[in-house]
Amino acid sequence: MQLGLGFWGSKTLLSAVEIGLFTELAKGPLGFETLAERLMLHPRSARDFLDALVALGMLERDGDRYSNTTETDLFLDRVKPSYVGGLLEMANARLYPFWDSLTEALRTGQPQNEAKGGEEDFFAAIYADPGRLDGFLKAMTGISLGAAMAIANKFPWDRYQTFVDVGAAQGGLPVQVALAHDHLSGGGFDLPPVGPIFEQYVDSHGLNDRLRFYPGDFFEDPLPAADVLVMGHVLHDWDLEQKRTLLAKAHEALPEGGALIVYDAIIDDGRSENVFGLLMSLNMLIETPGGFDYTGADSLLLDARDGVPGNVRGTPGWTRFHGRRTQIAG
Image (cartoon, rainbow, N blue to C red; front, side):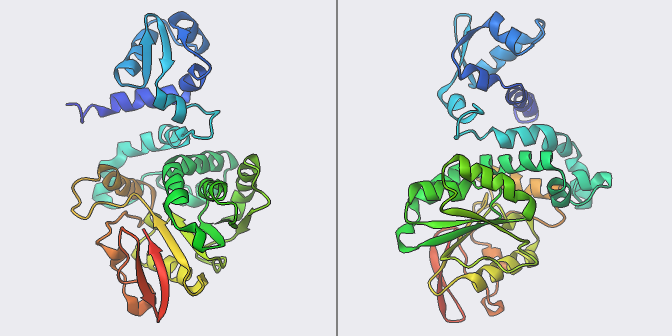
């Protein structure tokens, strides 16, 4: 029952993000009447809505006054750089109605997003609309921020001088890496419409002297040369042959001893524990013609004879490409 009716709690949270509840409470605790008035909540449902969020662990209440939890204050206040709600905003505006057609997707294998309504494919539709593109790129920052911080702190960046994030979106990972390592320079590679959004985000962090935007299409154009290339939440968008193509192009662009970092919602090898990774793969069914997520043990079914690694794993390791030693960190 809890799982089957899970959309009740999910939509309650998504609506709270949509109306800016957590951003409002980040300014300070508020009494019920004041909060309901500021959010323009109808009196019939306002108290149930706010108290449901208390019960869900998204708010705290002291008498008649409501406040954010430590976590919602950090992650769901739109003003803070740690805001990850962009992903939830996209989930509310786009994914929530599309997932209503999951059964159809399971039976047809076809996307259930904008493409189903006769529009262009998912990426073409998103990138053609500046408003939707901005929301999508913020969502990508939201889903990647935790991984970006971990990569910035745990990868051995002291061995390298330059890096480029392939499919950089708003620039969340380049910014985190550059903030943590003053010696590095690089930037992000993405389709040309992303450029102004990337540059604005980078400039807001004072890093435009070290990070630049590289416009291009990673299927049509060569990847920028750098000591380290990063592909985050990129490979899962594409079918197996396209995954192979992107990895081969990364290998072509890397120097001797260069590194490729790949991060996705990688499924556990037993395919029974990482719920998020498995559901993300279903989301790729909803969103793309051939995308899927994968396990570390899958090795993306690659063959070293094709010039791409045959032993890519979910943990850092070394593999050889035609005699060149190239690091693959997953």
